[in-house]
Image (cartoon, rainbow, N blue to C red; front, side):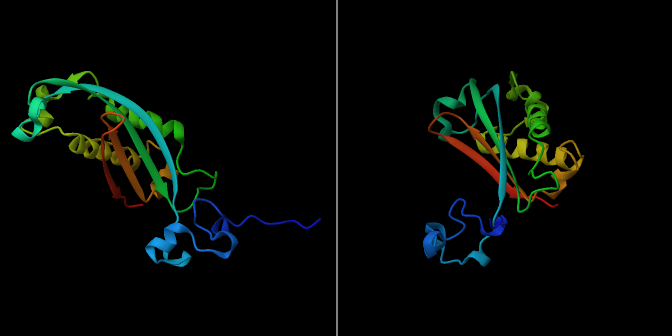
Length: 173
């Protein structure tokens, strides 16, 4: 019996490898060949946060008044290669870091927090705040040594099942 070696760079996952000699839909639309596309592994962790705030400006309508918000928070950690253990990041440590990043937002009125004085704490703004907190956790080693090889991260705050906002950025390994 012949043994077949698994080659991750040739794996037929997520349209990254042409099946039956055809170009994937993603490559056909982008016009890029396999060697031009960046492959990325992703691990996502989820938590939630409940807070109160008000927003300044006519554009916010009734949200100008103090109101509560419950966000489902997703964080995607990305890197092009798996670490020596075959993972992107330790999911347990990533979950703990997210919980920690949300801790001083949870059950708080953000209008009363000095750090947010005279800031509109929009969903987009809060996604960036959480991103920066998690980035600090990565840099300090809280997500383990393998997390230093992460190349990008995306934080998404879901306001409801039909509306969400995100902040995404490459991070220095």
